[in-house]
Image (cartoon, rainbow, N blue to C red; front, top):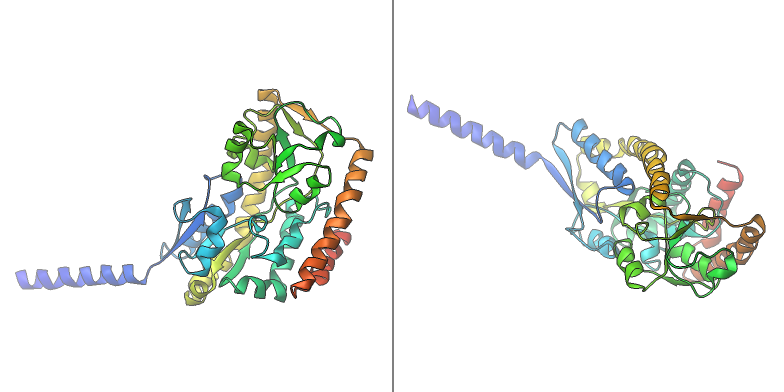
Length: 336
């Protein structure tokens, strides 16, 4: 009897070990804390687990695996299987997707941002660009137009931006530089400290980031309609890890992307924006708007010159820059 029990127990234990061995776990490197910017990754993890009965899980870490500027490097060496990063943090590492960060492209909605990003991500030059890092682009993190929150006297005209130190990266940084501002590319996690310590006098962020990183807490003013552009922050996976998935696991992952993005957009358009307007009113932040004439002059000074420089610089490095730019602007012109 004891022998039968022992054999039964060992068989059950062996089955447990075999089941655990078959389970797939991916580590996911994010930063900050859970917020609107990461909701699609959280939803993706939920969907993948549901579809595979818990046999494929995404273990999400907020800063415990890597610094945000080093996530692409971590993906390249297989330190983790999935990560989020922003193109503007290291433009030389991912020049193809920085076309989406050019100022004044005219993107009006998060849905448009998703469609543009998907088109650029699927371009052969972009695929090859990210392949240098053993990375496969999975999905974008669509963000609305950036605006600026700051301390001190509010810039009542665009001329008042001259000499203003602003945390701004990518095309947004290049755009405000045309106003005479001094862009500084500290990371989102460092922005509040930079503002409080006086390293910068203003921060360019999308609303969720002003809320999440606390830059609105001590701000005295916020620009309502500067809208110089946004940043592009994809979610990527390690290509070897993606290839190693079973067909069922890969299908569970890829088939969940659109639903995860739908969840992200719904959450951002409702919860985040409602919270944003309420927070501005609660804190008594001054809302500064600029005239149509000022904004037209800003676009004239920043849009074409920055785009032309981007095309020339990236064509020189062998990227089909004009083709990528035409892809983006052509889709926008057709109202997608």
